[in-house]
Image (cartoon, rainbow, N blue to C red; front, side):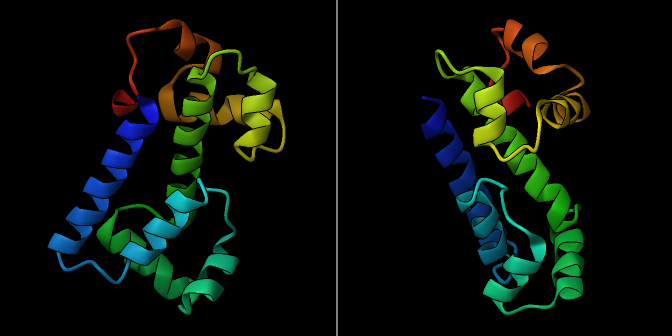
Amino acid sequence: TTEERIERVERFLIEQLALHQKGDIAPAVRHLWQRRGQVRICEMTRELGIGERQLQRKFLEYIGATPKQTARLVRFIHAYQKLRQPFESLTRAAHLSGYYDQAHFIREFKEFSGLTPRQLLSRSQVSSFEL
């Protein structure tokens, strides 16, 4: 299932972090995945006991993106998974994924995939891994 695929990808990514001596950032990545990207960076730094600038430097060094960019990507993946569920509306998927409004939701979909949510859903051959 899609959920199982995401869990496998998450486990793989966390294992890769551990293999490359990047364990100090693994809790932050896990934090983002557990909260499906719906986290404020200042709250995350407080919970993890690390400074915001230090967290940003670590993310850039190990992942190549800032914590905020990574959170946006995680939220996008979660929203896409929600949309793939039967009978899930665009509005409900946007709301459940933490988007402020549908315009913001559509704008992020275009930014990450190059397509609107409806266009992306119409391509039945697109899997979560291809995103």
